[in-house]
Image (cartoon, rainbow, N blue to C red):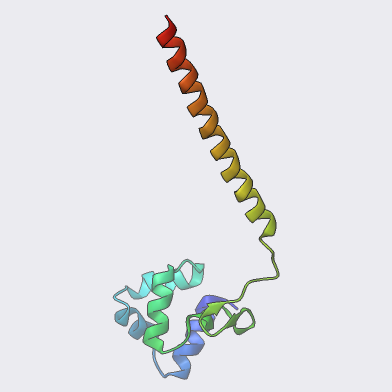
Length: 113
């Protein structure tokens, strides 16, 4: 569901207007409306809106993907990314070690002249 429709529903349930919400959030009516229509609200604005309307932040994203205020992970496993990250860390350590060895070789060659 579109974010604006979700907010409109919440405001209607509480007998409030969008202009009231904009005032409570220290935003202009037009600015807030445009952000809602485009779905371009910042996280901090969504959090503030949730506090003002006394709703969990997940309410604005649809209940089927959220439980309370915490985003549930979609069926995804980050094992591959974790493995790649560990491989990158090992590579960085190896390169640092090689760099230190090369600097030592350069130092020894400089001393022998």
